[in-house]
Amino acid sequence: MRRTIGGIPVYIVMILILVGLLQFANWIPSAVQEGALMRYGSIEEVRAHLTEATVYAPAYYPSSVRWPPSLVAAQSRPYLAVITEYAGSRSNDTVLVITQTARHEPPLRERIGLAVVRERVSYPFKGRTALLEVGRCRSGERCSRISWDEGAFTISLVLKDAPVDLVRIAESMIAGPGGGTVQHSAAPVGHAGTPGGPPR
Image 1 (cartoon, rainbow, N blue to C red):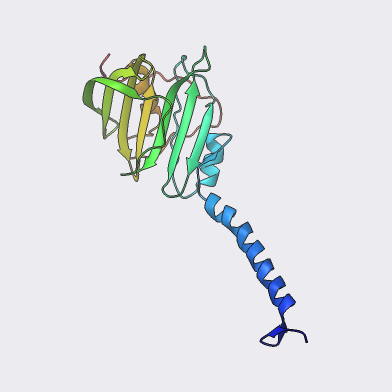
Image 2 (image 1 turned 30 degrees about the vertical axis):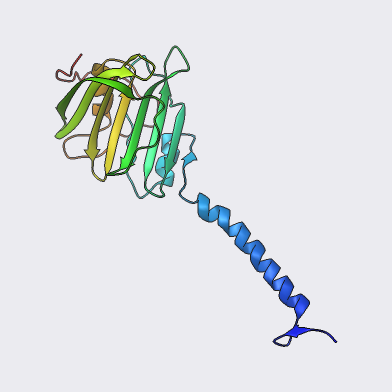
């Protein structure tokens, strides 16, 4: 006698259950990966993917920094965050890291960071007040960091060098006191503007 469940043969019920489990298993990776940290080929690609947010990037780089970036990564979950890394012009070592993170959230892990802060000042630029720090990186090299709130985000730059070039890079990311971002589609170039007196 053929066994049934609710008038349906057992083997058909088992097939339907198996199909459902397979569909659920296929759904899990896409649900987990959607919005998770991903590597991108360029800043423009990140901008095209994260259309709900402004992605900031410099229009100026000093000669010691190689363009394009060696790493571009971003996530939209559990909060929006972008990180870009740049190698030195004469080596493959990372010399500049830029993070853009939703306010009050921790930034993505930086490859370089200040281990010792020797000077910390408030630095006004383009209608904003940034925190400018000078010290030594974890590797013992001279480092400087500047960070400020920009709209819904906190932007942070760490450079293995004195803060003069760092401030120029930061200023080139902002169009002006009214906000906005400097856009570029080709290799950025230096600008003539000279920042007003950051620590040396």
